[in-house]
Image (cartoon, rainbow, N blue to C red):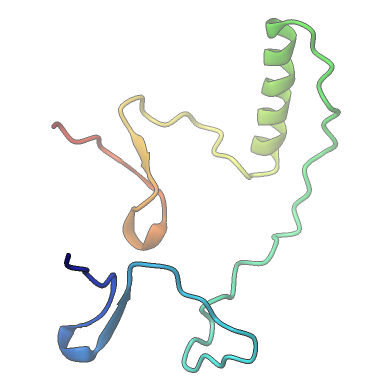
Length: 106
């Protein structure tokens, strides 16, 4: 039986590839990762209050959902223009930007 490591050095040792789980124990120090976990702060934009749906029909639920979408668009948290039908969201776009890309033929 052979076993392949999912964690290894690459590119002459200049890169450490982690294909498994990476665990930091309490007290561990990480050097050179300044800014790695700096996530964007909130823009301070609050959505207007959208009451919980009390819809009892699909049509009423659709109306509630459309009000929620309108609130997101008004707060600039969602594009107000529709994307082309043939565009798909690629979660692995450049640098994880989730860019819309053209689908590829397979």
